Image (cartoon, rainbow, N blue to C red; front, side):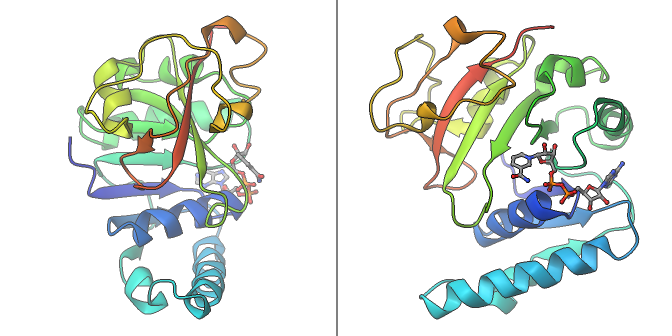
Length: 222
Ligand SMILES: NC(=O)c1ccc[n+]([C@@H]2O[C@H](COP(=O)([O-])OP(=O)(O)OC[C@H]3O[C@@H](n4cnc5c(N)ncnc54)[C@H](O)[C@@H]3O)[C@@H](O)[C@H]2O)c1
């Protein structure tokens, strides 16, 4: 599945960082925030971050910023990454609206820290295509994303987000191997399903960002 166009919703601390790393990976980003001026502030913080990284040999800030389009509402994309306030009702409403705007085959991801992915998926007609992508702050610096499967998240959806280098999903429950990102577990997964933690080998990658290590976990329906 190609994920060349990504809609990032929320241009705050996390959303701006996510838009930055997605654009830096060569993808086109549409950036939306409901608060007036928030996208402009997000773009400013992205520029500052890119300029710092450029001093250390990072990408040309103008080239990365040229791939980020501010948008005034949700727009169709192949992947949405939601990073709005940590409020279940706000996120559920957003997922309901996104379900009506993004194509049925698009993937809807949430950066939630604590809200079960299964309950966000229940607000849509595509629970198999809803997944958690839990980034860490500051996103451009911490090369770590926890991928959280809801109860209904399909293997196909998870495989589109995670590439373990062999083109297959890590599907064997394993103890957390030393040196992997799975030493960091989101509250979204840990209290409800500790025995269901899935850990990939260190070679695992987020297909979206090439160099990012991934921990896989699942949420319960509670
Ligand atoms: N800050 C962290 O360290 C961190 C780390 C991991 C995950 N998270 C999660 O990331 C999410 C965002 O956190 P943050 O720190 O970036 O928050 P933030 O307050 O910096 O940004 C949230 C943004 O969402 C916007 N927003 C609110 N409702 C909206 C709506 N309906 N549609 C569009 N935009 C809307 C706000 O205007 C704001 O700009 C939360 O779910 C949080 O739990 C945060």
